[in-house]
Length: 164
Image (cartoon, rainbow, N blue to C red):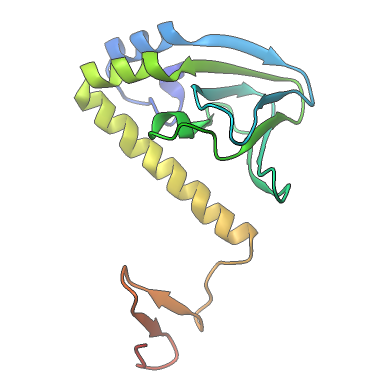
C-alpha cells in the first residue's frame, strides 16, 4: 500500500506525499498487542497496511470502531489538538501499519497549507463517516418518525408541523 493511495492522501502533491512518507515507520504487531491506551499521550497517528485494529473505550469496554480497511487511518486524536487518545487500539490479528509522528507531521502541514487543508478536509470526512457508522451500530439511526435537529435547539417533528 502506497501512502498516496490512502483516502487521506489521494491526489495530493507528490512532494507532500514524499515528505510524509519519509516520516513513516513501518511496524508489525501480533494479535492482542495494544498500540495505545485510552488516555495515553497522543503522539502518533497510524495507517493500516494489513490486519485489524479494535478501537474501544476503557470504561465500558465498548468497541467504537474496527479498523480493517488497508489505508484506513486511526489515532486521529494526535492530529486535532488532543493531548490524549480518546480510545484504546488493540490488534485483533497480526497487523502491519505505518506510524507517523505527530510533531513531525505538523511541521509538514504548516509548511504546506494547501495540502494541509486538503488533508484536514479528508480527515473530517473520514471522521464524519465513522460517526455516522457509530450511530447505526448503536441503533441511533433516525427513522422517519423521529425528531431531527437543524443545528439549533429546535426540533421538527416529522409526523406534523410541530416545532418544539
